[in-house]
Image (cartoon, rainbow, N blue to C red; front, side, top):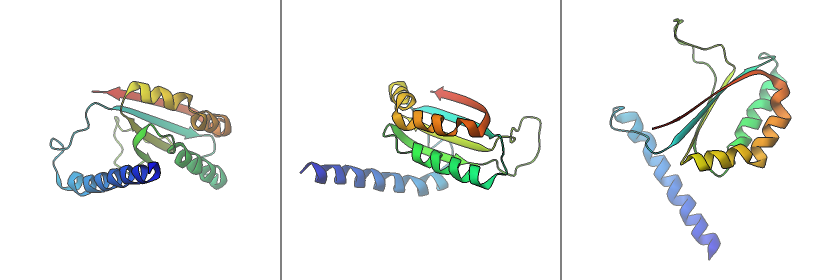
Length: 136
């Protein structure tokens, strides 16, 4: 019975998230707001950003990080090819942004074995990391 409940909960969450995508694309920014969440945005500068093996390892590691159960939403990306302006920072190699329901959930993530292993196995690949955490 427990497996069925877990399946139903996960299915409902999946349907809810799938339903948000079209809404977000058609809605104005003021109509779709994320409130009561903690956003954790991390920028990585790899030592060898053109090394394909390092990039593959790092991308797999970031995707593995998303298995931490307290993460509610995520976005992993690379710099966009936007115009050069004094306020635009695009020298990083990867952007990793995740959302948590609370500071407590973020703290669980920080100490989680998957996160600690990510740092242990991949910190040799980067020469700079910048983190921005925000709440509303």
